[in-house]
Length: 297
Image (cartoon, rainbow, N blue to C red; front, side, top):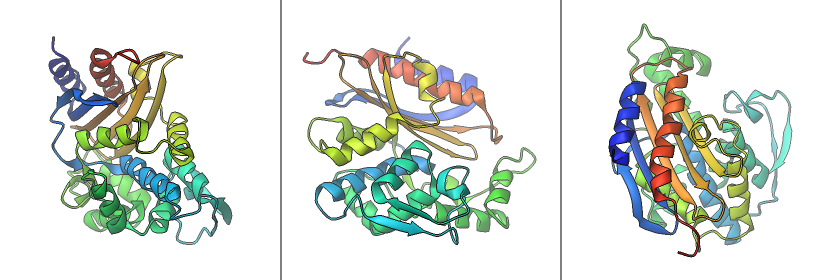
């Protein structure tokens, strides 16, 4: 069975639609794709794009990665992890904010970094200059506010519960690629190739991003299909309602790293759908293995 056909079979069995792209980081022609050029909302996956812009700005001397920020709890972006759940003042450098937004998908940390980089328009332009069509329409604070308005919910928690309610047909702008931060699966693997490839971000600030992504706390998606202790999986998840995504780079010992993006939208809205999480890992394995090649070939 062709890998693309196997991907379709896995996604159908899990009750979801998917957009998939995998490629070797050194060769864009060595690829496997399934609807890879369709633009879809990417939720927190956008934090990896934010980190790329941060690394390039740090390399260019446009920002000091050790600059410290005194962050107060008032107005902190809601979220389930990191700064978002703390009640006291926090003093952190920008590079540690980047680590939090990648390892824990910390919403508050990501919004601080977005502001520090100049906001959505500037980040979108910086990504476009690199050839990446990723439309950043706002940070998590903006997305939550839009979603709460769409659903008539009073706060972020009520919005999340509305999205997961099986008795409601929830319509939100954050499912619309024309209104939410969005990209294609192919664009996202191209971004990862910039980070793991031979030239664009080789320095210490790229190292911060790459190392943080290998420490991602939510490793149950890609890693479920690649459960090998000697394989390095560096990933970034994105989750919102029926959207469950992960992008990452898979590196087998002595082999060329492979960038993969598995973006899904499930038929069911529940917050916990382990069958879809497992399907993401199965899809990743089915497209990564055929692309494997040893270094130096």
